[in-house]
Image (tube, rainbow, N blue to C red; front, side, top):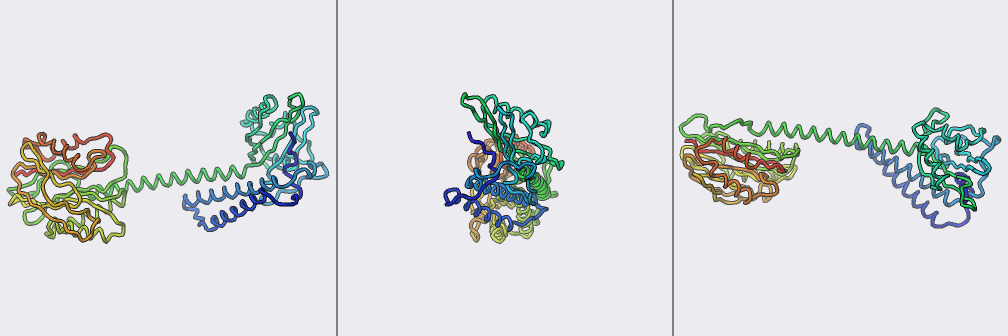
Length: 474
């Protein structure tokens, strides 16, 4: 097998072109395009993502530089290159930005004559005086870090004894007290009897390439930490906003606080079983003028701070219009127009119910949402009423109303989807209606909410859900 001892000293290009010239042209064109994109990329040192992008561009440019020089060596004829430098021919000084030619050296160790030949570039890579004799295979580990010597020994032994190619890296301490990473590739040269007579190797200084890869890895890790911290901060803000907006009820509440007739009201927010972004589910109960109470639940598309802030906007609008006396149907019409004007398009389902205590009548309307459930005695049913389009889906559409007269002891249940993993609509309604016997017996609204939470405490639930229960107490 011929030795590539002078592979790092190309001679003049042979006449004519060929496939390698075409590859070199393509590589250099790609280098120019990558460099143009890199120059146009803002170098914001304070942005982890930009630091990571910049490091990747730098690594790509280094690798393209190396590919360009590798192809140039492949194209050029190394046979006309001079021998390794002697005492009269010291190695030239390294240029400010070393190319691949100043980072690749070669060597050959003759096992029959004990002769060692190093190229001039190998002296520079290993930090050796060009006037000093090249090191034997037994002496070479003296330049290598203690931790890496066993690796070098295994590579050389495997090559000489078992005839395996060499392909590995080790670190050396340069004469300038600098740590260099060297990649070594080589093969044994076999004699006529099949025994190893010499070993050749090409050694490449890959310190800069490894540094660029470390930079990419470090900036990627920094970007991941930055994103994780940002996600934690956003989640905390969304949770705090949700807690500030949703009523913090602990137990049943009486609506109105004074008067002969009242509703016993309780509600709960059921989070998903696993850590998940804050959703857009909400519930509300508000005492109104004119001996009335507003009940409502709904869900806004989206997650995180955006969903929580959207819920805050919707609840503010609902409360304001309800206090002004707006009936449930026109109230949903106004919410529909409100969503149509927001900067971030969103859809929302909702049901609003206005209960008059003096007449025990409930006027309600819904927008793409399950109807309220009415429990009387030990049976339950969904209230009949118009469906109504999702808020934000068909701006300008009207939402009709329905009216229901209640009796003392009746129970109303309003809920959002997400109680049962992977099921919405009728599947959830059937399970809720089956709870009627457990709701009977004059139990409080809070007791009924506990029954719902117990029934739907699904370990695999992935969505947020809300439930609100109102019992006609008197």
